[in-house]
Length: 589
Figure 1: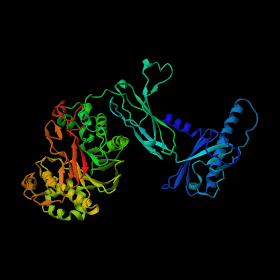
Figure 2 (figure 1 turned 30 degrees about the vertical axis):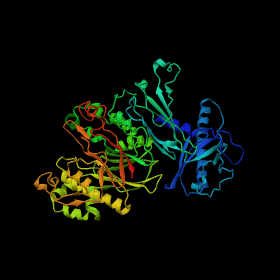
Figure 3 (figure 1 turned 180 degrees about the vertical axis):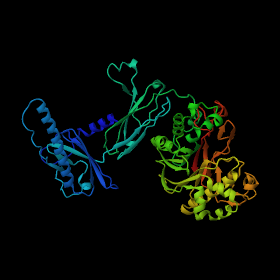
Figure 4 (figure 1 turned 180 degrees about the horizontal axis):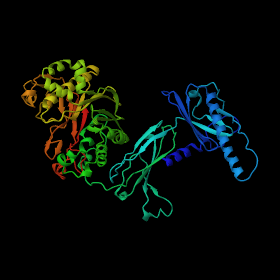
């Protein structure tokens, strides 16, 4: 903490800049900095500077207050600083036997001059007075005003670093953007390098990008990142440094996704869309005693740790060069602190929808240079069923079966729907839906109701709000190809005598005839399995596409059975989830 404070103080001291100046004589080439933070949505602005006596000042002033009052306050602070310095001087003289009284400090003249050298009138409001490039005079001292300069608010490295896997820092900034920041990576000095004798603890690497992939040569060494915030307009703020908490460790070797990356080295052309759907296994479920001893006893405990799995996930997802990524079982903290910053570095914007009363939910990412977000229409199934007129008829039908109705309303499942527009052809829009349906093997009837709510909601968006836009519906549907939910989605209807209506016995029978207007196709077909654990394997995940508007260019092959079972089942040291990502390239018809 003290190191950060000292760094902040140093950054406020002299800055080698020679901007326009005004008033009085010519200021020295190197002026001190007066940093102003002024945001329209906030009532006050802040002003930070270091007085000539070395004391730092941080003032909060009303934006509408006349400048004269702020300058008077600065003058008072400066006089107090001189007074304290005078008392110290008097004490020193007294201890040294010197005679004479310290002079009463005079209040210094404080003025503000605009960039063109004109004095700023004292009645001008603070918000308008403190402009970038203005010069503040405090007695003989000169300060260059920097209004809303780029500043880092957070710089963090992942806790786990693996050789051969991308290190993606979390970069949060104000008045700056990560893509405009400058990055310098350093590795720890080895004793054998002889740097310790020279007093050098770190050696700069050749990397100058936001994402750094350490080589095997760096195993055992810690990393350091120095980041300088920038705003894209040649303005840069003070740099921050962060050191990794531990050294780079050896990676697992070959991973299940390495061969798949051979098909996805490049981003698709603008006429195509690469879509990914993937249940990434929430940490909240992986880190339980039940998971370690019953669900995944074959998986090495360290390979279930979220920090380890995040290394694999980030490399896997980045390597798919996708345009759309729909993820399920995403911990909120994983989205905020890990996946969103990492995929942002690879050009993807992320959206998150948390489940009701849960710590995990859904995430949809889209490639920024291909798509812009037009609107979001996320719902919780239970809430929408009760409150939206759209589902009134279904709700009335469901009320006839109170046991089933109660179970449906207890579920926390959600639907994430995003409407995207092509950046190169505004006429091309997509309705991208993402969901994770109820998990229980005997919950087929519950899933049918959830699908009915989802299809009605998607119909409202893709037929009413944005007529005739293509639909891509991704997710973990917890439904095999022989299930009612799969049949309902792909055929457009479900009969009231389908066996899934009695999936949990006669006492929970509910019979309804349901339909939707879409012609949907499973883009990746019906793989033998997309979920492979010790006690079960089957196809539960799908990317459904609007067959009237989209067609499949290629399906990226799933890992071989040998790769999946190398460590018995999933997850494993070479695969971060118990599910397998589905990936396909689509194009508009």
